[in-house]
Length: 116
Image (cartoon, rainbow, N blue to C red; front, side):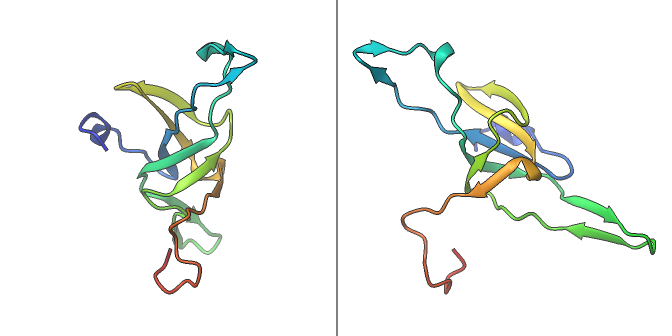
């Protein structure tokens, strides 16, 4: 995370993610302009908020843990969250519920012994 992004701290159950840049797409020899390209749904988790606080009927307060961690590659909702650009990178702040899933990497452990 660069210096500017350290100033952005998501609140509550929000997550800060960085969109992956799409490679240049060429179809039939025609370069598709940036305005016509679809946004990438793949992103990397950059920062987490403090988490969701759930009040139950008995008056107790329960802290709900995040299901993702910083560094996870995730699939996000195409139009969810609030987008902004910083230093040429596209970032999105969205609720954890707008994360559709965690993408598994090729180098992760498949037996579960190391927590990956």
